[in-house]
Length: 230
Image (cartoon, rainbow, N blue to C red; front, top):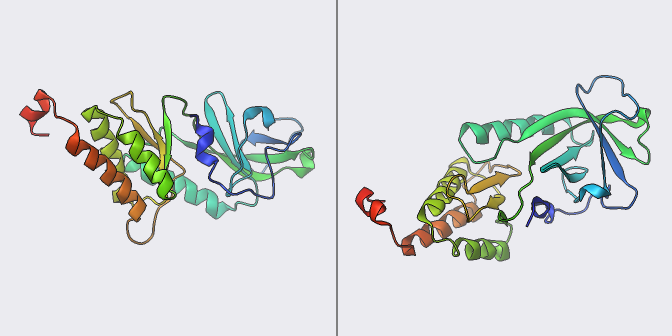
């Protein structure tokens, strides 16, 4: 499964990036400048676009996922996304170096310079197999997560997934989603699309952590772990 899956939960927006002939031009740089015709990165239906309920859409290129916002997303939204990511990074939540890029955004077939608007893009790693997408949005998705966790028998991998989820609980991450890699021991979980609860820790976040803890109870410890008491 590739990172296209992370956005399949999203509801359609007025702009449909999957419609044949549509494209978005993203010209990275300061937003208060005059646009220059044709400058920037042009994303088309060849870049496996997915709809987004928050942005114009998500496009995939060169092992990166680009979630692009136009002027419908105001400065407050841009600042919040940046701050949320910085909070995650400071707390050592596994998020694999996301970046927020300012720029001018225009939409084809009306991508002439005078139609450019202020915007920004959130750029993250595109995770491909053996990375497996997970989300806590609904009991069926939580059941899928449990199924994947129950396939893992390496306690180091499980402990590192548990560590990431424990941080998510500490941060009160809401609607947690991301990717797990059952084949690696280092950094086997990565989170995407970061949002926080302003109230109690969301139950679905705690449920993901509990699934991993339950799995660890039945996976045999190695001799080294017995010595360490882990």
